[in-house]
Amino acid sequence: MIRAAIDWGSSRFRAYRLNNAFEIVDTRDSATGIKYVAERSFEDIFRKQIGDWLKPGDTIILSGMVGSQNGWVESKYIPCPAYLDDLGSNCTELILDDLTLQFLPGICQSSPADVMRGEELQLLGATESHNSGIFVMPGTHSKWALMKNRSIDRFHTFPTGELYDLLLNQSLIGSLLTSNSWDQAAFSEAIKLGYEDSQFLNNLFLTRSRVLLEQMHSSSVPAWLSGLLIGSEIREGSQLIKDLTKKIFLIGTIDLCEKYGSALQQLKIEYQQISSKVTINAFISIARQMASLRE
Amino acid sequence: MIRAAIDWGSSRFRAYRLNNAFEIVDTRDSATGIKYVAERSFEDIFRKQIGDWLKPGDTIILSGMVGSQNGWVESKYIPCPAYLDDLGSNCTELILDDLTLQFLPGICQSSPADVMRGEELQLLGATESHNSGIFVMPGTHSKWALMKNRSIDRFHTFPTGELYDLLLNQSLIGSLLTSNSWDQAAFSEAIKLGYEDSQFLNNLFLTRSRVLLEQMHSSSVPAWLSGLLIGSEIREGSQLIKDLTKKIFLIGTIDLCEKYGSALQQLKIEYQQISSKVTINAFISIARQMASLRE
Image 1 (cartoon, chains in turn purple, red):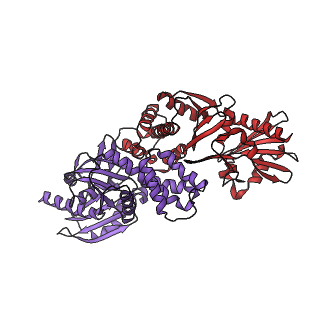
Image 2 (image 1 turned 45 degrees about the horizontal axis):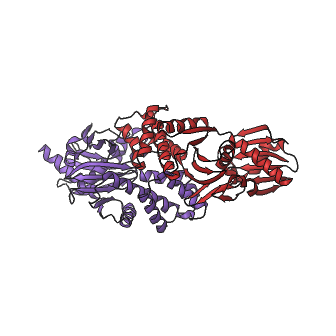
Image 3 (image 1 turned 135 degrees about the horizontal axis):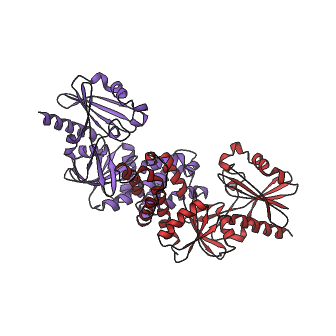
């Protein structure tokens, strides 16, 4: 039977144990994301995390960066437009003694070149309530996807979260920071600047100059930098997706959705938040589909 | 007498010994930039580097990041428009036993906020041959300055070099890189994209997607990333300076000027290269001016 589904990303390992009725009866969550996996010890970690769940003949579904070039098994990409109900039938299989591992595919787009791995599950989960629209999934590599009738029409990635971390923790711009706090007024001002102004590189340096010239306190740097990046992402995303007459559906953690929500509200762009727990619904839907295909 | 001039930046310490006729009779150059100075041991390093040059009563001129918040003595900023002949008379003085140290001021601009420290000397040096025009000084924090009759009218900074290092060496985008080479065709393609397209964040991620989808070899990442950043800087700089009917004067190291020159040529923007050694001329000019003020 299909015993479990695993969302194994860069940072975290999240597993869901399923029963015969495709209900979740147990979960495991640990900080053993693939970037912490030493010497390709994927199987060790997998067995250590959920070995006690498994019985001979079981099938396990896996999604996320575990199926990437640096993961356990590189699974294929489905090209856009990608019908989400095709995910389950496009797995890359790995037989492990008496277990079958099914690595879900990622999604790709040839022009402009883009890739996603993991976010497509959030989109599939979201289709239970919304078949079409613009879906924004903030994160290390934020995704903006245009969905039409349960299929990903096109999407665009912005390395907003990664750049924020690099700039805050490793750059001369972040080096001025002396204390960590959140200045909502600075965030809001920078959202406006990033959204209205396409001089991104110059605006980045502004962060430093404003502090040096005492136009801004150094403790405002995190909020200002976050606003500048998110405002720029919303400008670029809007330009690339174009069809902003539609409402945006926001999928992500509470923290990030709060920041993006506050930015969208300020820019008078209508949005609705969807819980990031939709990933679980997507796993259940794929497990049901796989099981019915075997009958 | 004015015994020496020191260009003490983040990475390097460069000292020039002057004779009575303001000719350079000796130089010292070491990798003891201020970011390598432990526990504010500025005086130790200063004396170790050029102690043997010094006689009681000497004056030494200092420029660069040594006069910043993280430097030895924080010197003032002269606001834009800044007349370059005012540099020498706006020093911040430090008396060190029987020596006088004169820290040259930086330049600031209140709107948009911006600062420079060190590049103003290159501009002063360049005025020997060119009083007015657009001057581009590529580097960690590239500067674009509009000069009018020996004064800096306004200027704009782009953290192009710093971002390039961060992205290539610390990010998931750079992590795909397997070998270091230079792909001039990729550089040229990315220059065009960065110059024509203001979706900077999305284009950054394109670097990664193109490699993952095998549209580009991973060894092309350095050139592509460099082209994207430099092309974006030229787009932003052109928009901010506006007056691009004028020719650009390019001041910098051979390496960087070659890259920027090749980009400007491709974009059909007229430019002329000026040796970065103009800094020495600027020091000599300030030393002469200081000496004559004392007579």
